[in-house]
Length: 195
Image 1 (cartoon, rainbow, N blue to C red):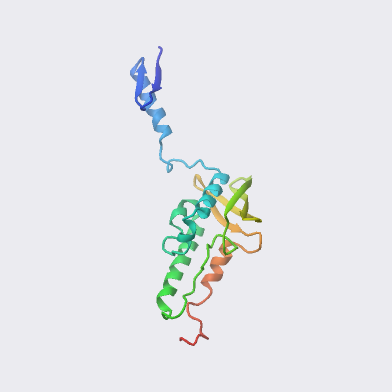
Image 2 (image 1 turned 45 degrees about the horizontal axis):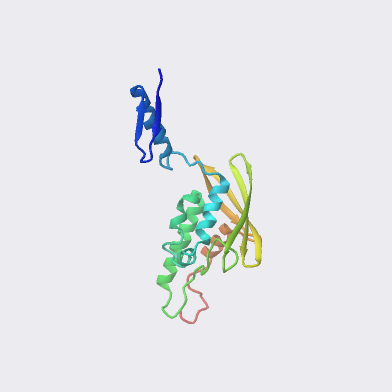
C-alpha cells in the first residue's frame, strides 16, 4: 500500500492513499502543535536563557517595582519552593506598605531581587551548563556596560520540567538568602519616631 501526506502552504492536509494517511497526518500535526503542558522539553540552559531574557527586558524594571506583578511572568520558571518564597516576599512587602505611616517608606526590596547589583544586568553574554542527574548548575555570564560577572543558577527537575531553585551571586549571597533576610525584618522599626 502506498500513501503520502503533505501539508500545503495553508496547513491543509492533502492525502494520497488510504484513510490511514489522514489519521497519521492528524497525529503528526497534533504532535507539532501540542501544548507545552504535555511535556516541557526545555533544557536547563533554555530555562535560564528564558529567565534572563525576561529579567533583562525593558519591562523588567517596571515589573520589579510592582510587588503584585513582579513574579507573574516567571511563574513557570521557578520551583514550587522558590515560587512560594517569592510570593510570600511580595505579600509581606504589600502588608508592610499598608501598616507603615504615610510619611514613611515601607519595608521593601527596591531593586530587582534576582540580581545582587541594584542596577541588574543589561546583557547575558553566555551560559555554561553542568548537569548531574536531576540537578543542574548554569553559569550565567552577565554584564552591565563594562562591568562583568558570573552568577550561578541552580535547577532541578520537578516532574518533567527543569525549574530554578536558587541563584548564587558572584559577589556573595543568594536569592533565597535575600528573601529569608527580608522576611526577618519587621515592617515597623521599633526605634522609629513615627511609632
